[in-house]
Length: 220
Picture (cartoon, rainbow, N blue to C red):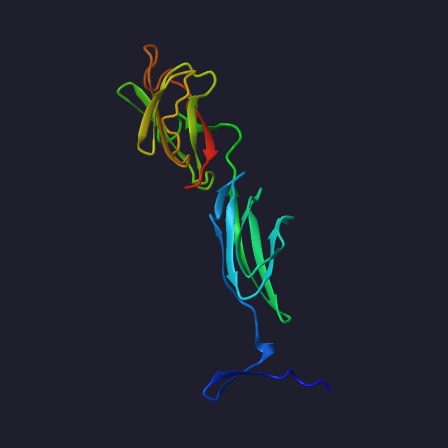
């Protein structure tokens, strides 16, 4: 029959004695973080950790650059997609692990249309001005996706007045505006246009008001 591991006797002076069992030394992870935990595609984040033993980093999706690490350290990573990182530490046959997630946000490669038909309930026609309100929902637009520019859609030959997030600008055909650059795309957009001499409220007005919004990703 195999004998149990002998305890360690550690002298502290003045005749004191501490008995510590080697078999009870379970490793632990004090902290494991990713800063920032939301990045734009192509950006980097830094993993930092402190633990009681050396270990290894891994990821899902897999990252071949990860591997063995010291008990305390940091490492820059550049995930191409939303990734979960795991730190695993081992000591004397026992192990512990902890995970952190990093969200990767990608801006649309092409501009997106924001607008609506004048049949929308928000449409008003007062003082010879046609207007409507469109909401770019948060469910469709991450707050890290911000406006790069606003332009009128192809074929529009009239000026629009655009209001969004406390800013306003008049946009003419063929003249994109950067007045809203840096603002989150999500939220309320108010689009309006003056009626021409041949138009009148309820008669011969545009069927819709639509703008093209180009965007980019930024850390907030």
